Length: 454
Image (cartoon, rainbow, N blue to C red):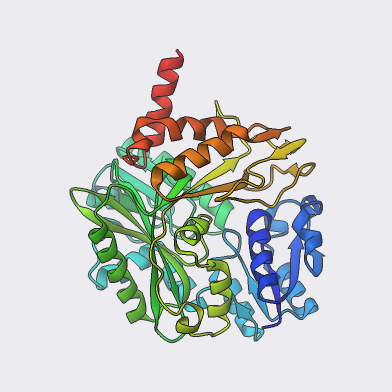
C-alpha cells in the first residue's frame, strides 16, 4: 500500500489523513463543493471534487468515489465512519477493482450490517440477546402489530442497515406503533438508502457499554477495553468515556474476552465495536456490531496508547496483529470525549454558519481536539452538525472531568451556537459525577436544569 483515498469529510478525514502521513502513504481526499475550504483538503497530496453539497450527490455517490479511486491510482480506500463505511456493496466494488477496503471484509459488512441477522448470529454463539423481531415488511400493519406483541411493549423500532442512533424510535403501545414505524422507515431510507426496519424490546434506563476490537486476517482478535456511551440525546452520543465507571472490572474483562473469542471463532477481521446494554440486575445484552471505526475511538487511544486508525490501516493491508500490537496494553488512566455540535443549546436546532472565532483547547496538555474545521470555515447544513471532538485524559476520572470542563469553559466559538453549555452542565451534574448515567440520564439532567431555571 502506497497511496490511500480518504472517502470522508470533516474530523474523520482529517484524522485519517494524519495517520496515513505518519505511515508514509500518499494521500487523496474527495470533497463536496461546500467543503472546498476545509483545511485538510489542501493538506492532502491530491484533491478531487466529487459533487455538490447533498451527501447523496457527493460522499454517498459510489460511482464518483470509485472514479476517483481509479483516476488517482490509489491502492486503498479508508471510509472513516458514516457515509460508505458500512456499505457492503461499495466494499465489494473496491475489492473487485483489486483495491484494499480499509475496514472489515465485505462479507462482514454484509452479515453484520444487517442488525437483525447479526443478533441471530450472536445468539447462536451463546450471547444474551433481548427479545426482537426479524426484518418486517414495510406495508403489513397486521404483521407489524403481531411482531410487536410477540416482542412485548414498549418496543424500539430500529433500521436494519445503518447506525448512529438515526431512525430509532420507541413505541409504548399499538396506537403509537404505526406512526413511529412510518417515520422510522422514512428516516432510514433517506439516511441509509435502505428503509428496512425491525423491532427490539425497549429496555428502560440501561447503560450503553461498547467494546473496541482490532483483528488481523489470520484469526487473531484483541480487545482494547470498553467505552461508556450512556450520555445520549435521542440516541445520539454526546459524551463517551473509558474505562466504564461503576461496573466491576472483572465483569467488563470477562465480557471483552468472551466477545473477542466469538469474533475470532467466526473469522472477523480488521476493526469493530460490539455495542451492549448493561444493567446491574441482568448484566450485558448484545445490541449490534459496528463494522467500522467509531467516532469515539480517541477515548480508547487515550487509555491504551494505541493509534487505532494507524492500526486499522496496517491490519487491512494484511499485517498480523502480533506485529501491529505485540501485546495488549494496560489501562492508563481515564479519558472523556465531548462531541461539540453546531446547535442551539436550548432547543437543539442546528446552527450552521461561519466560524468567526474557533478556539478550543489549543496547546492544553492531555487534551486533544479533533476537527475538520478552522476559524473562518463555514459549517454546512448538509451534514452532521458535529464541529469538533474534545478528548481529555487524566490519571483519574475526576481529573479527566475537570480538565474537560476547564477546556470547554475557556473555549471561544463565535458565529454559530454550540452545545458546550449543555456539556458543561452535564459534567457538573451529580448523576454524571457519580458515574451513574443511563441512556435516558441526559434528559433527566436537562429536565432538572430547566426546573431550577423556571
